[in-house]
Amino acid sequence: MKHYTSYKDTIKAINSGKSSCYTIVQDYLKTISEKNPEINAFVQVFSEESLQRAKEIDQKILEGRAGKLAGMVIGIKDNICIKNHNVTASSKILKGFESLYNATVVERLIKEDAIIIGSLNCDEFAMGSASENSIYGPVRNPLNRNKVPGGSSGGSSSAVAAKMCLVALGSDTGGSIRQPASFCGVVGLKPTYSRVSRYGLIAYASSFDQIGPLANNVEDTALVLEVIAGIDKNDSTSSSRKVGNYTCVNTKEKRKIAVLLDCLELDGLDSEIKNSIDKTIEELKQEGHEVEYLSFPYLDVLVPTYYVLTTAEASSNLARFDGVHYGYRTEHPKNLEDTYINTRTEAFGEEVKRRIMLGTFVLSAGYKDDYYKKSQQVRRIVQDKTNEILKDFDFILSPTTPHTAFDIGKKQTDPTVMYLEDIFTVHANITGNPAISLPMYKHTNGMPFGLQLLSKKFSERELLSFSLELMHEYTKDGK
Ligand code: GLN
Image 1 (tube, rainbow, N blue to C red):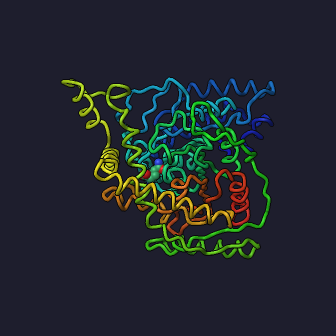
Image 2: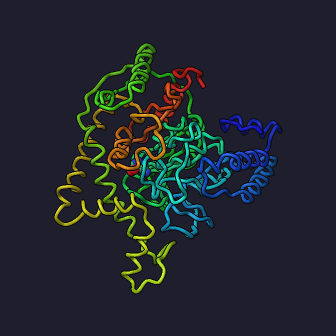
Image 3: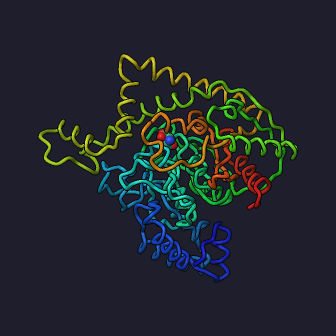
């Protein structure tokens, strides 16, 4: 059994007759059946359907009419709708719910002949940093099965890292693509807000959410972004800007890079992570890139701002789960109010309830000016300050996370400890800028960790080109 780690190698093997879509899908199904019982990344596997699709695409390849992702095997986070399949966002409240339509991203992948192999476990409604808040149970990190894979797209990162699919889609509201990518040693990209349609993504915090790819390398990430990005009449917030050519060339341009001192001086940042980032900065300087340290006195307010605004939006978005419209309904309700209360009490998990309560509180009449409005103002200040930095610099560089993957169960008891995991990632969601995590390092504890780059809005092409250069030139094995 052979798993290719890039789309380039996959399609080469298919075109040369060494393999076929059918064989490739069979191999992935085999790996899933071996590894998934323990890793728990997939919550549904579409075995028959993907084998059938593989056959059809093999035929299309023979006839020279296959799309640009022909034979790419993809897993989809369980908060993205796939037609005629259950979609639950890992919540009991959506148990039994079947989607009547495909999310735009899924539709676009299928149109280019990607093969959707199944749906992936995550934190309930994408709320979490460890993929432990799920009705399906925790996901395990394939690199050390006692550790979390990160969250909330932990099913996506572990499926790619364990070679159970070539690429996965995740969603990122405050880091849920980049943090699990960092914990599992894969690439994870959060595109610019509005670059990718959110139609068919179960909303957590609508002004923060973005869908993006997790992959083994920058090239596959770019290829998938190229397919899923672009305006969509079903999402009025999607941008009408032209989609660039992201499958990039390595431009070797000299770049201007900002490093936020406050990030590197953060109390509690793992010293090995700090040293590795420092070393990369030195290497970048030696290569002729300009690197400057800047102060960013807003680091402390990012996490609180994020949690006030996202919980406010979540409390409104999750109001639709009432036991009437979708999925689960309480048994024997006495009246309508009873239906609402009991359904929600029985079927939302603890973290989701906590966030609905917090969100309702920060929006309540007596407090909304102190919390919600204040946080909106802080969001604007952070956006302005970030834009100002990016006028002079191409990228803001930081670690993706303050630590490597932690043990399962370790941070479950104190939500505020868990929330601080997002300290470096929420920035890009507060501002709407694109950001990527690159699996450049390995800790002496054996776990990988990522370097994060944040760039100007809609500059995915530059972001991906520079990422490619970093992965090729600045990692030991240069792959
Ligand atoms: N870990 C963050 C949270 O719990 C981010 C979640 C996300 O990006 N979906 O909110």
